[in-house]
Length: 171
Image 1 (tube, one colour):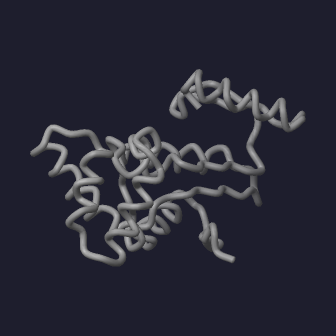
Image 2: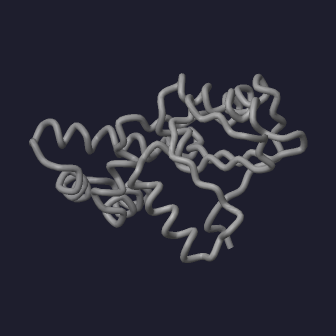
């Protein structure tokens, strides 16, 4: 990670967890030159929030630095799942622009006129996340949901094979 704050948090968490086999490196992905290939590369909370050239840079890095038989785990926002959320984001941003209000006020106003059902559920979820999380998630400067097919195609163009997907929170 290139963020000193994020690296400090990661080091603290690794220390509290007693992890001795983890090496944390503070560097920009485009400048990071590891000593050896990795058996696992995990990019969580990254792909959907960076410009396309950085996405391609991530795939280049993985192709170059993943050991033979290694596994890369990349999370990304799938367009089909984010379609409804992006409509809410667009409407909330319009309220923000028109009323000069922050994201939480815009969502609260929107909630009063939203149709019952899925739209209100999404707004309630966003309100529960809070402004700090929303600034780095739904309302981030870059929030780019991709189709599964486009993601798989990009991965394949970098020599990776799709193994499968997962859904968090499902019991």
